[in-house]
Structure formats: structure tokens, C-alpha cells
Length: 304
Image (cartoon, rainbow, N blue to C red; front, side, top):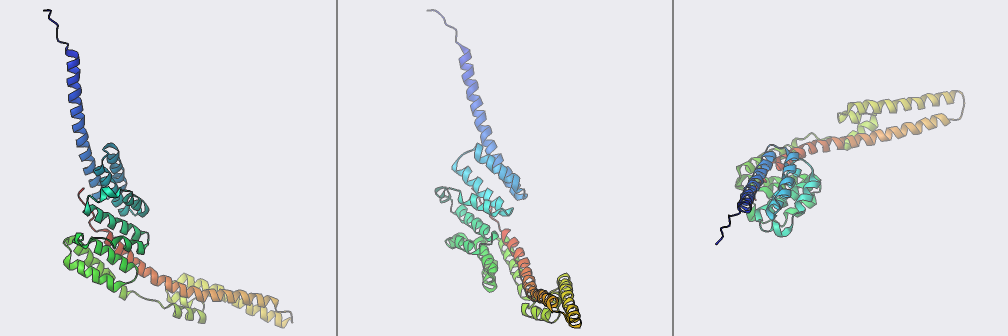
């Protein structure tokens, strides 16, 4: 029997390939975990742009239903926090429904993200419609209730908003949400103490003295400007009328100046009323910005 030496080269290559594949698989698993942790860290530090990039990288290199859900959910969360509401909606609605339904708590929070995106786009009715089908049993932390209170506040139903927030303040399982509800109630309480300027009274003041209504609403430059324009054309009308009377000329120039002066005076009256309305709305909008900011601080982090 002739002895044949064992060919070790193919065997060595096979073993090397096996160990390389095992090492690569382990490295990929570590890479997936590290990318998830890195993305979450960026979200916690409010570095939303880099967080979205890390999430996209995670979804691309580690394709699966779980990675797709994780990436889309937290991308929508990042876009919401950074004020890019339309992109947040696109991410939130782009997840396959059959994947989302496997995770009830993720679906619950994803719906809240969509509602807050609509709220940020000032589409309050859409925001409330998103919250309507939510299961109240899943809202023990009070996230959905806070979003509803935000909707009621934005639609000027302040009493209803306060009632909802009072319920959250006493029954939410998350202490952070109880604190948010308390802060929102404190902000809502300032609505009644906002200084309100009467548009009708501002218009009457400007009708009596041009620019006085603007000064009443604390728009001093507009008041001086209105007085200067109307006063100048009123004086021009008087001077032209006097000249035409003395010289016995047709009153064409004074008539034209009177029309211009009347137009400026009418716009001065309407401007004073609108300035009062603008000042009132600006005060409320300033409070609404605070309330939105407080509502957006709810904890939407969820385990996937």
C-alpha cells in the first residue's frame, strides 16, 4: 500500500475561513450593538443630525425588521425634537404596519410622535385625530394625555386643558410627566393675566388723534409714523385749500390731498385695531411656545 501524504493546504484554508467568518459575525454583532448605543447616546445629548446618520447606518448594515423599526422610530423622534416635523411624519408613517403591531408600546409612542409632529405644523385637528384611537390602558405614564392637553391649549380650550393636566399630575406613573403637567398648568394660568389691548378702543383713539391707537398698543414708532403721514397730508390739504380759495382757483389740488389724507387716516385707524390684535396674539403665542416646549419634553424613549 502506497503512502500518500495528507494535503494540509486545503484543510488549513478551510479552518482559516471558518475562524474568519466566526470572527466577522461576532464583530458585526458587536457593531450592531455599538451603533444602537451610539445613536441613543447622540439622542440623549441632543445631537440629532448625527443620531439620524448613525440610525441610517445601523439600518443599512444590519437589515432586519427590528433594525428597521428601531431606526425609523428614533429617526422620527430625532426629527420631532429638532423641529423637522414633516420628516418626522415621513419616518413615522413609513414603517410597515405589520412590524409595528408586534410592539404595542412602540405603536403607542409612535402615534404620539405623529400627533406632536402635526401639532408642530399647527394642524391641531390632525394631532387630536391621531390620539383618538389610542388605548388608555397603555397611557399610564400620561404621554397621550399631555398631548391632548396641548391640543386643547392650542385651540384655546384652556379649562379643558387644565383639567387633563390635573389628572396627569395626580395619576401619571412617571414623575417627570407629573412635573411637566405641573409646569404646563403653571404656564396656562398666566393666560388670564396677560395684558389685553382692545382693538376697538385702539381704533377710536387713532380716529381722534392719528397714531394714538398705536401708542396705546405700545408700538411707538408706528404711532409717530402714522401721525407724521396723516398730519403732513392734512396740512397739505389745508394749505392747498387756502391757496386755492385766495387765488380763486379750482379746488383740484386740495381735493386730491384730501383723498390721500383720508386714505392714510383710514389705514391708520385699521392699523391701530390690527396692532392691538397682533399684540394680544403675540402674548398668547409666546405662552403657547412655552407649553409646546414643555409638552415636547415628555419621555418617548422605548425599548425595541
